[in-house]
Image 1 (tube, rainbow, N blue to C red):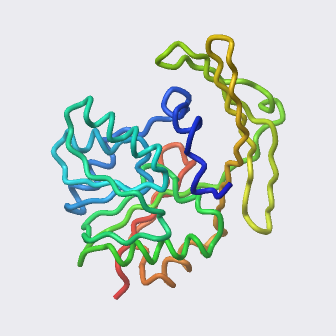
Image 2 (cartoon, one colour):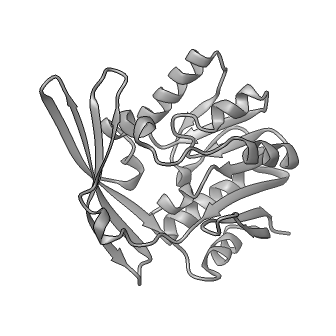
Length: 243
């Protein structure tokens, strides 16, 4: 399966109840207010924190590669009484009619781009969609190997219809030279005596020291600032059009 199609079908259905981390809207609201509107969230998924930013009255649109996740985002927006504009496109193939003062990813979603070539295409897309004086925010991290004791350990949740939802790590391959880690996740849904299961490859790609900066420069972007998050696990790059 193409990495861009990971969040489809049963995985999209199970994403919200099983996700381990929810992105708070506050830091991204502050970024949009500082950089200016309009704004674009890359990899907006089912609407966190996009919908919260819209509830604050901020002019923010979203884009995602998964039609299933965007359908869930639109449904949540209707339920919350929020108007939202979202686009079904891949991050590495952006072609939107608008330019943005702020372009951002809520968390290190950029690490889901499977190699440097795809990342460069995405950065060129970001450059092409930045308004004059605009700023992009790209969080990145270096994934750690999954500890051996986590293999086979099941995390569970209950679906809206009472179904038992389960996810577990069943395999992993890490390539230090290619800077990729492929974790095989098993998603299971059990309800009324019926069980459905799929295995998906979750691909993460990271960058050596200076590697992301070089890709940004090749895309016509300059690094304006770099900051580590409070826990030190994520590094946030602010990018602007190179002079």
